[in-house]
Length: 159
Image 1 (tube, one colour):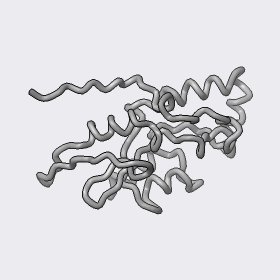
Image 2: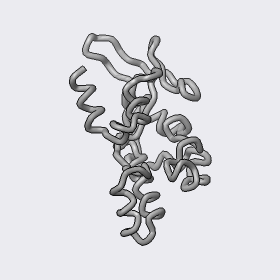
Image 3: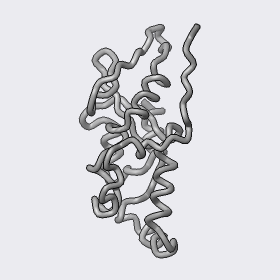
């Protein structure tokens, strides 16, 4: 009999990412980058991705993701996979609209922390093939497309 595995769709992956919230607002204007990214640090997220994405492929092969460590936490054959949030947070300080919204929300930091905790759940995460200059890395750092999940999805669709 096959074991039933329960995935908690409300689990906040920042909660098992050591130091994620340490100095969050001081680090790169609230981007939190460099503390402890759940994509690499959350063992729960890694296990959920392994369970959800290990499956038969259209070509008949079975993609059995293996657990590794650090940035190589999911592998299959010669492929490395990473994950990222697919929810636009618009936290970049150069977004003019965010500067105005910050002024309108009395406790902006608490509001954003609550939002971030809700987006770092399994429904807000996706795995990507991981390589230098890949689509997910570009989406995270290129000023014209960062935080634009819609453009990322369109690139995947066209490919």
